[in-house]
Image (cartoon, rainbow, N blue to C red; front, side):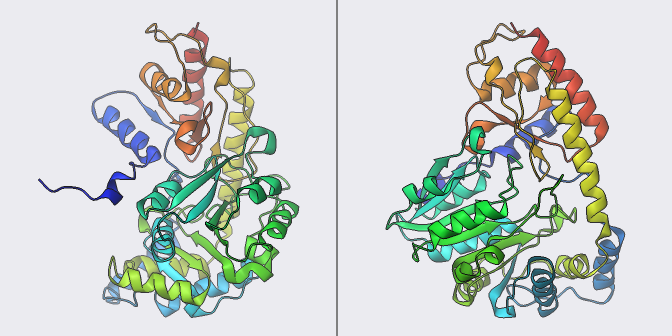
Length: 400
């Protein structure tokens, strides 16, 4: 038997993927399950993008490419950054990976030394701390409660920075809360970070096109250009373009960091799939009017859920500004007893009971670093959401 490394023992499986897999297994066993755990658009990849992939296959574009992205894709990313974010990145400042996770993995792999600290506002996407842990860094969690919109304050940030701080992660719009930082909030955070030149910033912008009401998206490097050399601007085609399975993530950043990330990638996965890269070129350069149309659908689903929660016993929910998640509080049901006479003492027991008794799969808030909440992905059909709400209401009404 192979003795496993200390590194692998420091991490745990993704909670969101675990819930999704459990829902699949229950369905396969004949259970009627509505899965609201996966952050995956239910829309299909647009036809022009699929055709670009097919054309690439027919043209024999199936060979190795440069390790961290084809020139064509890097040029498309460079144009996207300029067009949509007013950011200027040269081709040697752009990295393409097999999804956003590889970009994060590469960046921390080439920059973290033992006990380097990474500031992570909580709630957080489940992958951040585990990648930091894998490289023996130290995740430093900052609790960002509902009273601050689940967002870190400048004072919290300044109180947390010390000489061991290597990175600060900023995710807006957020997974899991859907919260989005305003321009003024970003400027206030930038004013703090200007005082600490040893701190690097990773901005996860994956949900930038999913913004609702009168809210606006701003990426950190455009708001604080004087910090640009210290910022890694992460993005990808998974969410807005419904290309989760194509596995293309990308980032713009300091050329020396990008070069090191490419060096590592040359010894790990090598290039992302050539066909997916060709498809991503079309996604970024082609007609993307469908993004706004789909965002309207997501907003309608968000509004439906928020309205439903107003009449559910023990559930409250802040209105998120973006992404396709809601992060309701289940604190009002903690201490109650379910149909099996089991007392619900925390959010994990709540989500487990909801799955077992109502057939609705969601993810507990504690998996994202904040106890007493749960995440619902509304990147699913209207019918699924309506049926899930009927089941949830019935489940909550039976608690005592």
